[in-house]
Image 1 (cartoon, rainbow, N blue to C red):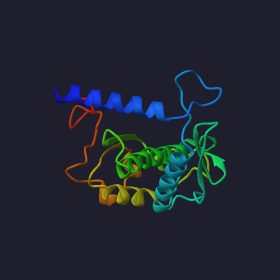
Image 2: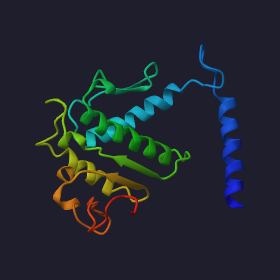
Image 3: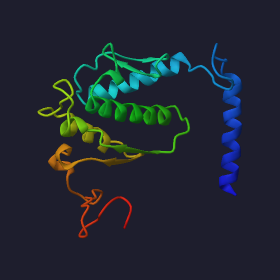
Length: 186
């Protein structure tokens, strides 16, 4: 019954939000414009995480409504290599989680990240290569301080700093008959 009540509350909230949002000009029926203040604030949360992780070239961040993505240091996020896109995608996902929590907005309370530190494993080019940096350590240090959120990370061993490679919350997937084969039991 509680779930049905929660669903009704969320539907009411959604309807109220849709009524309060101005219609975007030239958009599809039912679509609404993204509020500039919210996207600017979200971009600042993203910038804060990137700076905390010491990711190079992340001094300026803004959201481009035309592309629906972030522009980091004057370059569209999608214009970078897959490693840089992976870490900035993780940062944007986590920034949204933090943004919602601090503003008491609805969020499921957990995030699943797949290979956010790919630039340590398979960089596309020199700009994309994080080898020799401590972005991975700072990434995990930052997430370690988030006590009220659940973050599940699938990552390759090479990318994980030694102090985060073992522990009761770490599960190694072996892809062998011994140990845990994968995320879903066989």
